[in-house]
Image 1 (tube, rainbow, N blue to C red):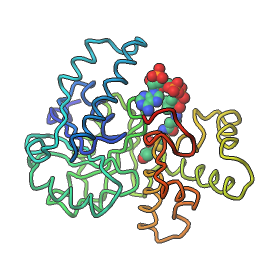
Image 2: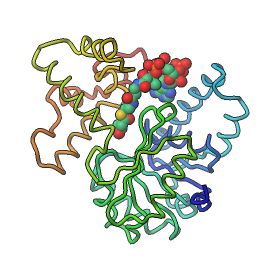
Image 3: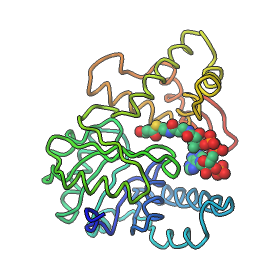
Amino acid sequence: MSALTSVNHITVIGSGTMGSQIGMVAALSGFETTIIDIAEDALQRAREQLESRMARDVEKGRRTQSEVDEAFTRLDFSTDRDAVVAGTDFVIEAAVEDLSIKRKLFAALDQIAPPHAILATNSSNIVSSRIADATSRPEKVCNMHFFNPVLVMKAVEVVAHPGTSQDTVAITAALAEAMGKQVIHVHKEIPGFVANRLLAALRKEALQLYSDGVVSFEDIDIAAKSALGHPMGPFELMDLVGIDVAYMIRLAEYEQTGDPESLPNPELKKLYDAGRFGRKSGQGWYTYASAT
Ligand code: 3HC
């Protein structure tokens, strides 16, 4: 735990599905935390969703009211990125999966953050060596990859690029553990890392079986659950993770591999183009009573 003495305040960039829950877990784990977004309404939505998740956890006896109240006193929401980052110890970026946006963002964070601060990205597909050289502290840049829903899933992949220091890896892994997570150390940069590559193989086959007309997507989900014991089928999981996220992950991989096999399946593209982003938009593969 000594590796962590330098971390008191955590900044999470992005208040989407991942960023908001990463921030909540950090605050629940005792860290002063600020979630940053460009838009007030996005922050407001994140706050409301977290409040209702926490209320449900208290109602179900999973957490106590005082634990939750204390966590909310440690959790801030802000649009004033620069003021927050100037006083932070650790940044977890959970913004959009777009390389040029991330590079610009990291260059800006590097200008503002204190010299000791680590700049980690939650990206599942963009390896940190592609971002680190936009900063003057490449040794303090790495991937710290959480899984959706972050409040529930125990894994965090910690991925160093060749220039990441051992200290950065140690602090990032210690932070993940302090957040109650189990660390998977990935030794080589590879788009998708480990868990997502396993998932991508399944998802790819599922989309192919569906687009070939072999079987409905609903029945593929049933097969994954009732024949393989998965907690969710691949289509339900795409809706949970976000159709936009699943789509952007494919594009980011294609951008790195140049292999047409990496491109999104046309059926996935159809949903993306129609703005059917999954649970968060109320419609994806399935239709939901309300957006969550
Ligand atoms: N956010 C927070 N907590 C959630 C949640 C969410 N979106 N969905 C469910 N939960 C929690 C709640 O505590 C819920 O209890 P509640 O309904 O009483 O509030 C509890 O989980 C159980 O939920 P459900 O009864 O609805 O459903 P399940 O028992 O099936 O559990 C699940 C839900 C934990 C999401 C489970 O289905 C699961 O493990 N699914 C697989 C998830 C997975 O594979 N994640 C990895 C995705 S890949 C990824 O994230 C990589 C990234 O790069 C994109």
